[in-house]
Image (cartoon, rainbow, N blue to C red; front, side):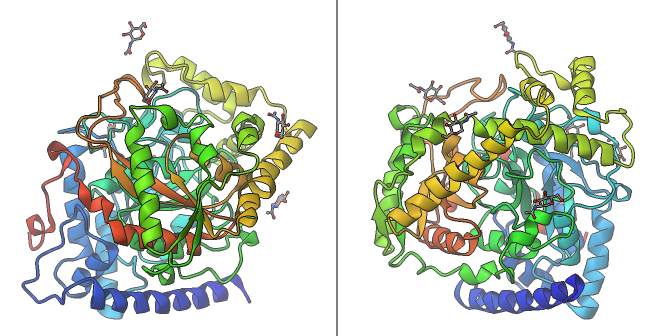
Length: 566
Ligand SMILES: *[C@@H]1O[C@H](CO)[C@@H](O)[C@H](O)[C@H]1NC(C)=O
Ligand SMILES: *[C@@H]1O[C@H](CO)[C@@H](O)[C@H](O)[C@H]1NC(C)=O
Ligand SMILES: *[C@@H]1O[C@H](CO)[C@@H](O)[C@H](O)[C@H]1NC(C)=O
Ligand SMILES: *[C@@H]1O[C@H](CO)[C@@H](O)[C@H](O)[C@H]1NC(C)=O
Ligand SMILES: *[C@@H]1O[C@H](CO)[C@@H](O)[C@H](O)[C@H]1NC(C)=O
Ligand SMILES: CC(=O)N[C@H]1CO[C@H](CO)[C@@H](O)[C@@H]1O
């Protein structure tokens, strides 16, 4: 079958599944709308709620874009200065109008038709649309990419509207010791739950913007922790997919062996809808040919009974002994307490919790330098290819060496005070290509993460998944294995939490009262469907996200009612 035929078939199959879910949801989770039904609150609005309103003619996608733009204006640079968004799409209103017209005449293409989505600034969009793709760096400002990223092509085909680009830790946190959530172009992203709190990185802007409804949904990317951690710190549901499930073509790279693109949303329902539409093979990223087909409709995993009889393991050594910190740390003890409670919830939901269920090689993983060898080597080769592949670049930067020189020559733009800001660039520049040592380290990573790590513990205890807090170094085993992580809200630091200043950069604090943290489900390659099911059962039982809102000044006031009919 030709790819296009396959895609069409797949789209219609997916669409049927999504429709089925939509009707399930309208029966069970929403009241029937009358003409006077209230407009959805954009702080929390889900894709399904917005589709109901769009279909019923309560508001249009043009209204949505206007409302989100106004919300961004309120809090991004003004007010609390959250700096979550780096650029708004100057073509978004025009695209929204076209999609509104298409909906009126032929109906919607998918559940993302006319829905705004924010992209991390390392995901490419074509230049004539009006947005940059820079990974936050002035060195890439004005550069022209050859084409849209693979995931963006899929989003456009599904009818989604690219709302803008999200701030991030510059170069997805692979430049050096930079503050989490800081980029030269975007400045310091701040958490919306406490003034100046660490948003975590590197998908910081995707996390903060989604947490308070500056967008309906967002995409982030992860090489090691960059979706999982900001999903947790910003009270969201996110999926870090298996390497090879979502295309990395057109994504400013760190390493093809670990990079992934995934959704960051306010619910796993939204995340499942987005993932179903961005997953799938892409001829421009051959790792995607390794995934099992057909791509599942992940919305069919949204069943609250999935944990009944599931066997879930607790790999305590990964988060207690490997430097993740909070095991013996009073300040971070709230995470440990909430985690123990979560295990109780899993049991209540019928899961058999196997505790501990340690990775047999947990200590080896904690001590291993193999990941650094692989990432340092891959980054130089891949970023050089990215820079060479650009149609044009005003800075003239065409290699990693040029990038380092650009930052040195432009300290006012690219050098935050008191940070050794290029250590990873410099280490990567010193690598000499695919040496024997590199291939050895890559093989060790796969062995440590997969055969002697995650797969070993799953088999040893006959487990369906692992569960652990979504923070710090807990992402390493899945990162080196290329395996998936599904993260949902777990809890919030209590009101009496002492505020620790400067922890992620001079302008940040962490922890602090009210700052969220997450719970992660891990599994083997391409187990997203099962992990989404487990996460959903937990999310629906606890509804932790709704337990706390952002601080008052960080909550935008503009709502659909302010723009509809204006
Ligand atoms: C990039 O940003 C600059 C300056 O903000 C802007 O003039 C330009 O239109 C943007 N887009 C591209 C593709 O250069
Ligand atoms: C992708 O292609 C490269 C080079 O063409 C090759 O070395 C690599 O093994 C391929 N990877 C997969 C997963 O097919
Ligand atoms: C506990 O965590 C805080 C915040 O990350 C950190 O500043 C502190 O050094 C940690 N204390 C110990 C004993 O690890
Ligand atoms: C890679 O992992 C193996 C197995 O744990 C270990 O023996 C080796 O020292 C590691 N290599 C590096 C560079 O850390
Ligand atoms: C940078 O470090 C110096 C010396 O430790 C200190 O005096 C200064 O306040 C720091 N600046 C910032 C912005 O943190
Ligand atoms: C959309 C938006 O507000 N972008 C801002 C991001 O931050 C830079 C630096 O402060 C501003 O110049 C942009 O306007």
